[in-house]
Length: 86
Length: 182
Image (cartoon, rainbow over all chains, first blue to last red):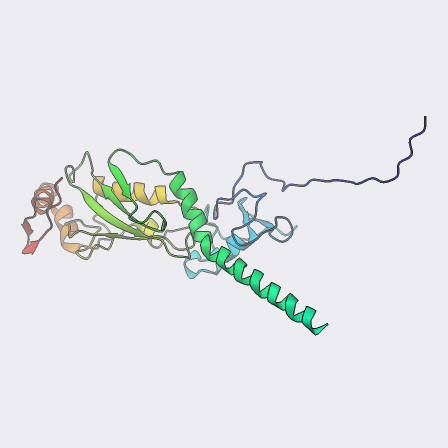
């Protein structure tokens, strides 16, 4: 018997390289979900990993850094928030 | 051709209006507040009241300390969460005129995490625990009611008497306070 493949579909799944149930400390949504203002996870709503080791949705931490009272500090540990360039 | 164009534009306008409505319906602040409220674990000394269940951004809190100098009192606070939450702290005010080093006569509260030390990873539980702590350990440094702070610094016993007096609706240094005993 010969099997002839006429058509095939590849399916892939992805997730961020963070512990599975980790949430963004700012919006408290899982990292695999989006920040409250986005609809699609992934490159449209990426994570930002700080040098201090704390991660947030890019959009969430951006909003925070732009508020005057943040003084540019990480909302978790109050060290200067600098992100790790990939 | 032209007709198709205008139809498409109409469709887009309609969906945009719908999307706009959706956004209004659940804002980021509401989402986050909802999460905080669902994770709330209130001790038996604290009660929460939501006058309008549709509006989770405005509610009141009653603290009835079961130890410390403010034991026996019943203290009410209003919480107002604005659309910038959690980037801005909730606005918390005491609705009664009380004698406390960290709460002024207008009800403004001096708590570090409600002001300069706020950060968006803090949640409502942290604020509520902080408020309760003010009644267990009034803090005479960095006061809002300077006279009360001075009293506490000088003689703790005298301060305790003043607290008792004020909670009963009495006067402290010519200022009358609200009766807050339950």
